[in-house]
Each structure stands twice: as structure tokens, then as C-alpha cells.
Image (cartoon, rainbow over all chains, first blue to last red; front, side):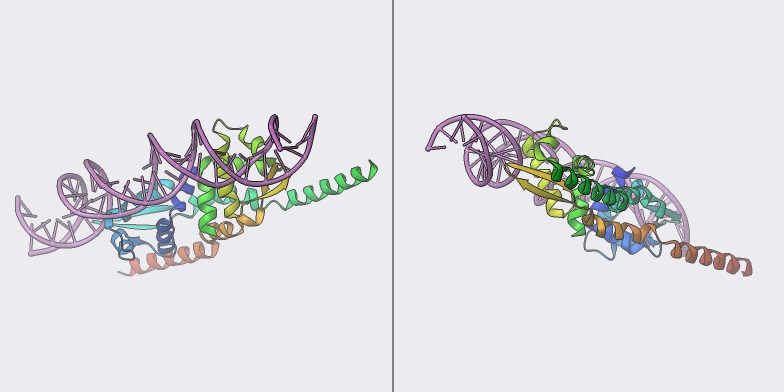
Length: 107
Length: 107
DNA sequence: CACTTAATTAAGTGTCAACTTAATTAATGG
DNA sequence: CCATTAATTAAGTTGACACTTAATTAAGTG
């Protein structure tokens, strides 16, 4: 699913939508009112966000309330951390560099 | 810069490149040898990755060694954490839900 | 200096996805 | 059941971008 999540959050307008629904659920039209673009365009964005798992819908009558789904970010978080969080690897590299300098001075 | 980083890592082949240079630096051609696509295509990907700040180049003669630049992920990590890491907000939501149930039983 | 190696930039092509307007679905209220 | 409201799906257009091959830059090496 990480493929879909990255694709979903790569689009600037979709990230704005995520910011809007981060704290409170909003209807499709309430979201659309924050933008210049048409309601169908928003609807299409919401579909992408929902199918990637980063938002959920609650239906009530003719309205649909969108809100964030935090677990949807779990995989991408892990992915990013593989690159960022690697303090162990940094130490490993330092050790290797140390090793290299030793070897050089012996040659 | 988050805009550029997200765009950079959104592309599947660029993520594969990141995996390759995650642990050790590699030349452009060494990277290209892992793929079916042409060397210029790889070069273009590397440019995007570099300009977004997630990789760095070290030039040595005619060769260019690419390696990961971990700090490049700092902003995107923070961004993701704003959605994921919000355990406080989850508690807040639970409290609100509790509140809602109380109100309902009073009506 | 010509030749080779490593890589990039240039220029052009096809695909995809973010929009548009128009049409459709779905739930509710008189 | 018709009208209204909320939202989506459909169909078509446009621009971006991931490729391609060809040309260019740059750094050694005989």
C-alpha cells in the first residue's frame, strides 16, 4: 500500500486536504469550499486519499464526512525512518572509516 | 524542500535507487547496471534525487559517486509524524467520543 | 593531441493524472 | 412522486514527466 500512499500525498492539493481533515471530519463540499477548483476535482482527490488508506468516510444521509486515518501513514513512516533513523548505520560507517584510515597508514 | 523530496521519492525507480545507495556509495553506471532503462534515464533520476537533497555526489575523476543524504529526509519525516505520531490527539478523540455517548444517553 | 571512459544535457515522444463540464446516483423533504 | 441537496461518475483536454536516441562535456591515458 506504500505505493498508493506516496502517490496520494505527493499531490499538493491532496496534502492541503489532509491538513483540513487532520483535526476534524469535514464533508466533501466543506472541503471543496476551501479551494478554487471544482467539486468533482475534490471528489477525485478524496477518492485517491481514501483508496490509499489515509482518510476514511462516514456516510450520513446525503452527506459524506471525511477524516484522517492515522494508521494509513504507518508504512510510509517506517519507510522514511529506514533512511532517517539510521543512527546505528552512521556509527557503523564511522567505524569503517576508522578501519580504512588504519589500513592506509599500514600500506 | 518537502515538495521536492516527496516528488523525488514518489517515483518507484527513484526509490529503488535510494535502496541501492542507502548503504554504500555507487557510481551512476553502477546504479544503471541494476536497471533495464538507459543511462540517461538514470542520470535524470539522480538529478531529481540530488536536487531534492536526499542524495549527494562525490566527484572523482570521470566518475561520480552517489550516496544517501539522511538529513534530506528530516522534513518529510516531521511531516509524516504530524499525522502518525499524534497519540495526544487520539486520546482527545477518545475523550470526545466519551462525551458524545454521555450526551446521547441524556436525550 | 587523439582516444576512451563516464556521465550529462538536448530534443522529441507517449502515457498518465489533474483538471473541466455534463450527466448520474442517492438520500431526504414537501 | 417530484424537487432539492450532496456528491459522484463519465468523458474529454492539457500539461507534466519518464522515457528514448543523439549530441555534448569532462577527465584521464597512450
